[in-house]
Image (cartoon, each protein chain N blue to C red):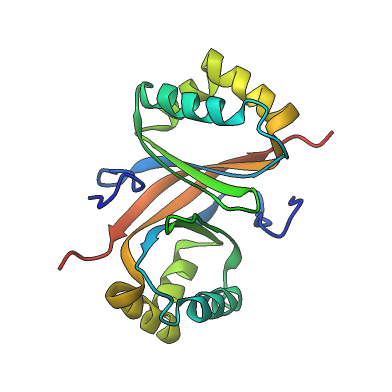
Length: 113
Length: 113
Protein backbone atom coordinates (compact mmCIF):
# COMPACT_ATOMS: atom_id res chain seq x y z
CA UNK A 1 0.00 0.00 0.00
CA UNK A 2 2.85 2.45 0.63
CA UNK A 3 5.51 3.89 -1.65
CA UNK A 4 7.70 5.08 1.20
CA UNK A 5 8.42 4.30 4.86
CA UNK A 6 6.67 7.58 5.74
CA UNK A 7 3.28 6.04 4.90
CA UNK A 8 1.79 3.54 7.33
CA UNK A 9 0.79 0.23 5.81
CA UNK A 10 -2.84 0.17 6.90
CA UNK A 11 -5.37 -2.64 6.36
CA UNK A 12 -8.95 -2.36 5.14
CA UNK A 13 -11.11 -0.36 7.60
CA UNK A 14 -12.38 -0.45 10.22
CA UNK A 15 -9.39 0.24 12.49
CA UNK A 16 -8.43 3.09 14.82
CA UNK A 17 -6.31 6.23 14.52
CA UNK A 18 -4.81 8.35 17.29
CA UNK A 19 -4.24 11.89 16.02
CA UNK A 20 -1.63 13.66 18.16
CA UNK A 21 -1.15 17.37 17.31
CA UNK A 22 1.52 19.15 19.30
CA UNK A 23 3.70 22.20 19.60
CA UNK A 24 7.14 21.53 21.01
CA UNK A 25 8.59 23.63 23.79
CA UNK A 26 12.06 25.04 23.15
CA UNK A 27 15.11 22.87 23.73
CA UNK A 28 15.65 19.16 23.15
CA UNK A 29 15.84 18.10 26.78
CA UNK A 30 15.91 14.40 25.87
CA UNK A 31 12.96 14.69 23.51
CA UNK A 32 14.45 13.11 20.38
CA UNK A 33 15.68 10.04 22.24
CA UNK A 34 12.31 9.63 23.95
CA UNK A 35 10.36 10.05 20.68
CA UNK A 36 12.45 7.37 18.95
CA UNK A 37 12.08 5.04 21.93
CA UNK A 38 8.29 5.53 22.07
CA UNK A 39 7.90 4.61 18.39
CA UNK A 40 10.00 1.50 18.99
CA UNK A 41 7.95 0.61 22.06
CA UNK A 42 4.60 1.28 20.36
CA UNK A 43 5.58 -0.96 17.46
CA UNK A 44 5.93 -3.87 19.91
CA UNK A 45 2.45 -3.34 21.39
CA UNK A 46 -0.36 -5.70 20.54
CA UNK A 47 -2.70 -4.11 17.98
CA UNK A 48 -0.18 -1.60 16.61
CA UNK A 49 -0.51 -1.12 12.83
CA UNK A 50 1.80 1.79 11.98
CA UNK A 51 2.60 5.45 12.47
CA UNK A 52 2.97 8.59 10.33
CA UNK A 53 4.68 11.66 11.74
CA UNK A 54 5.74 15.14 10.62
CA UNK A 55 7.06 18.17 12.49
CA UNK A 56 7.50 21.54 10.84
CA UNK A 57 10.32 23.97 11.45
CA UNK A 58 7.95 26.10 13.58
CA UNK A 59 7.67 23.27 16.16
CA UNK A 60 4.10 22.25 15.27
CA UNK A 61 3.75 18.56 14.48
CA UNK A 62 1.20 15.86 13.73
CA UNK A 63 1.69 12.18 14.53
CA UNK A 64 -1.01 9.68 13.57
CA UNK A 65 -0.68 6.16 14.93
CA UNK A 66 -2.96 3.37 13.69
CA UNK A 67 -4.30 0.57 15.88
CA UNK A 68 -6.48 -2.49 15.45
CA UNK A 69 -8.89 -1.60 18.26
CA UNK A 70 -9.81 0.92 20.95
CA UNK A 71 -8.60 -1.65 23.50
CA UNK A 72 -5.09 -1.73 22.02
CA UNK A 73 -4.96 2.09 22.26
CA UNK A 74 -6.05 2.00 25.91
CA UNK A 75 -3.35 -0.60 26.69
CA UNK A 76 -0.67 1.55 25.02
CA UNK A 77 -1.83 4.64 26.90
CA UNK A 78 -1.46 2.73 30.18
CA UNK A 79 1.98 1.28 29.34
CA UNK A 80 4.34 2.21 32.21
CA UNK A 81 7.21 3.61 30.10
CA UNK A 82 4.78 5.43 27.84
CA UNK A 83 3.06 6.85 30.88
CA UNK A 84 6.35 8.29 32.14
CA UNK A 85 6.90 9.90 28.71
CA UNK A 86 3.38 11.35 28.81
CA UNK A 87 4.11 12.98 32.17
CA UNK A 88 7.36 14.44 30.88
CA UNK A 89 5.49 15.62 27.78
CA UNK A 90 3.05 17.52 29.96
CA UNK A 91 5.74 19.10 32.11
CA UNK A 92 8.56 19.79 29.65
CA UNK A 93 8.40 18.78 26.01
CA UNK A 94 5.14 20.20 24.72
CA UNK A 95 3.88 23.74 24.91
CA UNK A 96 0.53 22.25 24.01
CA UNK A 97 -0.96 19.07 22.55
CA UNK A 98 -4.31 17.64 21.53
CA UNK A 99 -5.15 13.95 21.25
CA UNK A 100 -8.04 12.51 19.25
CA UNK A 101 -9.05 8.87 19.10
CA UNK A 102 -10.97 8.10 15.93
CA UNK A 103 -12.40 5.07 14.16
CA UNK A 104 -11.33 4.90 10.51
CA UNK A 105 -14.40 4.06 8.45
CA UNK A 106 -13.13 4.56 4.89
CA UNK A 107 -9.70 4.80 3.27
CA UNK A 108 -8.30 5.20 -0.22
CA UNK A 109 -5.05 6.24 -1.86
CA UNK A 110 -3.76 7.75 -5.06
CA UNK A 111 -4.66 5.29 -7.80
CA UNK A 112 -1.73 3.26 -9.15
CA UNK A 113 -1.20 3.65 -12.87
CA UNK B 1 -9.27 24.95 23.26
CA UNK B 2 -6.28 26.11 21.20
CA UNK B 3 -3.17 28.05 22.13
CA UNK B 4 -2.14 28.71 18.55
CA UNK B 5 -3.70 29.00 15.09
CA UNK B 6 -1.97 25.69 14.21
CA UNK B 7 -4.45 23.81 16.42
CA UNK B 8 -8.00 23.35 15.16
CA UNK B 9 -10.68 24.49 17.55
CA UNK B 10 -12.66 21.25 17.79
CA UNK B 11 -15.93 20.66 19.68
CA UNK B 12 -16.81 17.74 21.96
CA UNK B 13 -16.87 14.45 20.01
CA UNK B 14 -18.39 12.91 18.04
CA UNK B 15 -17.28 14.60 14.82
CA UNK B 16 -15.26 13.51 11.79
CA UNK B 17 -11.62 13.76 10.74
CA UNK B 18 -10.12 13.39 7.27
CA UNK B 19 -6.47 12.33 7.56
CA UNK B 20 -4.59 13.20 4.36
CA UNK B 21 -0.99 11.90 4.24
CA UNK B 22 0.98 12.83 1.17
CA UNK B 23 4.35 13.06 -0.43
CA UNK B 24 4.81 16.00 -2.76
CA UNK B 25 6.26 15.60 -6.22
CA UNK B 26 9.14 17.92 -7.10
CA UNK B 27 8.41 21.47 -8.25
CA UNK B 28 5.71 23.92 -7.16
CA UNK B 29 3.71 23.91 -10.37
CA UNK B 30 0.93 26.01 -8.81
CA UNK B 31 0.72 23.86 -5.69
CA UNK B 32 1.09 26.52 -3.00
CA UNK B 33 -1.60 28.76 -4.52
CA UNK B 34 -3.96 25.80 -4.87
CA UNK B 35 -3.33 24.60 -1.31
CA UNK B 36 -4.10 28.06 0.13
CA UNK B 37 -7.23 28.32 -2.01
CA UNK B 38 -8.48 24.87 -0.97
CA UNK B 39 -8.17 25.73 2.72
CA UNK B 40 -10.08 28.96 2.09
CA UNK B 41 -12.76 27.10 0.11
CA UNK B 42 -13.05 24.27 2.67
CA UNK B 43 -13.53 26.82 5.46
CA UNK B 44 -16.64 28.09 3.65
CA UNK B 45 -18.18 24.61 3.35
CA UNK B 46 -21.09 23.61 5.53
CA UNK B 47 -19.91 21.37 8.37
CA UNK B 48 -16.26 22.47 8.30
CA UNK B 49 -14.73 22.69 11.79
CA UNK B 50 -11.03 23.32 11.22
CA UNK B 51 -7.77 22.05 9.79
CA UNK B 52 -4.26 21.19 11.02
CA UNK B 53 -1.42 20.78 8.55
CA UNK B 54 2.33 20.13 8.55
CA UNK B 55 4.80 19.34 5.80
CA UNK B 56 8.38 18.32 6.50
CA UNK B 57 11.42 19.33 4.49
CA UNK B 58 11.48 15.85 2.90
CA UNK B 59 8.12 16.52 1.19
CA UNK B 60 6.04 14.24 3.40
CA UNK B 61 3.04 15.95 4.97
CA UNK B 62 -0.05 15.32 7.06
CA UNK B 63 -3.20 17.44 6.88
CA UNK B 64 -6.13 16.64 9.15
CA UNK B 65 -9.41 18.44 8.49
CA UNK B 66 -12.30 18.20 10.94
CA UNK B 67 -15.96 18.04 9.93
CA UNK B 68 -19.32 17.86 11.65
CA UNK B 69 -20.55 14.82 9.70
CA UNK B 70 -19.72 12.25 7.03
CA UNK B 71 -22.23 14.07 4.79
CA UNK B 72 -20.28 17.35 4.97
CA UNK B 73 -17.10 15.47 3.96
CA UNK B 74 -18.87 13.90 0.98
CA UNK B 75 -20.16 17.32 -0.13
CA UNK B 76 -16.66 18.81 0.07
CA UNK B 77 -15.19 15.89 -1.87
CA UNK B 78 -17.73 16.52 -4.65
CA UNK B 79 -17.18 20.31 -4.74
CA UNK B 80 -16.36 21.27 -8.35
CA UNK B 81 -13.26 23.38 -7.65
CA UNK B 82 -12.01 20.85 -5.12
CA UNK B 83 -12.57 18.09 -7.63
CA UNK B 84 -10.39 19.87 -10.17
CA UNK B 85 -7.66 20.20 -7.52
CA UNK B 86 -7.96 16.49 -6.71
CA UNK B 87 -7.41 15.59 -10.36
CA UNK B 88 -4.36 17.84 -10.56
CA UNK B 89 -3.13 16.29 -7.29
CA UNK B 90 -3.31 12.85 -8.87
CA UNK B 91 -1.54 13.88 -12.06
CA UNK B 92 1.06 16.38 -10.88
CA UNK B 93 1.36 17.46 -7.27
CA UNK B 94 1.60 14.26 -5.24
CA UNK B 95 3.98 11.38 -5.71
CA UNK B 96 1.58 9.50 -3.45
CA UNK B 97 -1.23 10.15 -0.98
CA UNK B 98 -3.54 8.26 1.36
CA UNK B 99 -6.91 9.49 2.64
CA UNK B 100 -8.67 8.19 5.72
CA UNK B 101 -12.12 9.22 6.91
CA UNK B 102 -12.53 8.64 10.64
CA UNK B 103 -15.09 9.32 13.34
CA UNK B 104 -13.54 11.02 16.38
CA UNK B 105 -14.89 9.27 19.47
CA UNK B 106 -12.71 10.77 22.23
CA UNK B 107 -10.51 13.85 22.51
CA UNK B 108 -8.41 15.52 25.19
CA UNK B 109 -5.60 18.03 25.38
CA UNK B 110 -2.71 19.00 27.61
CA UNK B 111 -4.23 20.05 30.92
CA UNK B 112 -4.19 23.81 31.55
CA UNK B 113 -2.35 24.82 34.67
